Length: 287
Image 1 (cartoon, rainbow, N blue to C red):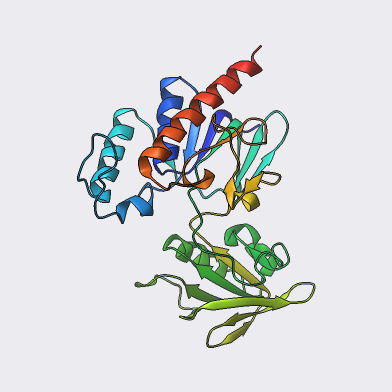
Image 2 (image 1 turned 60 degrees about the vertical axis):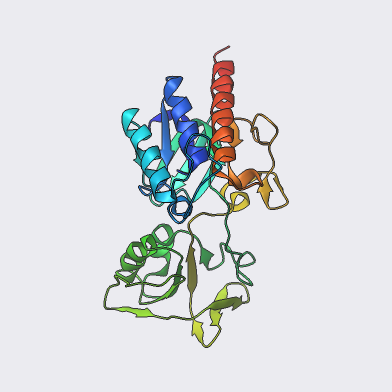
């Protein structure tokens, strides 16, 4: 049987990190999933003047302060991308590529997904469209696959898929040097629509079309409604109360994913509340 954590935190921005700090202080057995860069959004900020006690810092400076705090409290981030979370009654199952994690409670701190779905993406989800290339690659052995990558990490998944699929196309949504295997075709074009009947047949781009058996869209984060089946969404954000409680028992949320304003200090405060609410929930299970 796999280890079952008290709390699983999904996201390593200010909300997720704040939740992790409080879980540590309350001596809970937790795991936090995210990125070693913490969050790309912070690093890109030129100046931050509204975070109490840290006037005039750049995003890079604030990230360094966050990292110092994590190091001092011996908190490590698990670099796994969670693709789906299922409420199993007494616990949650979190799926990350070929691994499964279990936790009694979950805190969603996934940020906001700024990339809107392309036409047909949601319609063909599970019918040729997917968000985890390494999970589903074996289904497309010898077949044609298109991978739309929104970050550098997508290149590793694409290289893995190229060892299984017959033909792989990579469509990057960012600029830079691409570290791809020689048998991968790079397509620098804008995806517009997924077309098919029972299953997808082709990806239409601005200047071309690709006939394909699958399209994997590797984003920085999956929209919460797709990540957690049954989660209540309002105005494209997770619906929570003042204690950061969602409609799913044992599931909490904090930060940009629950609504505006999209500010670091607000996210950190909500992460704190979500963590305290999760602790209270865990304590209630013992009674």
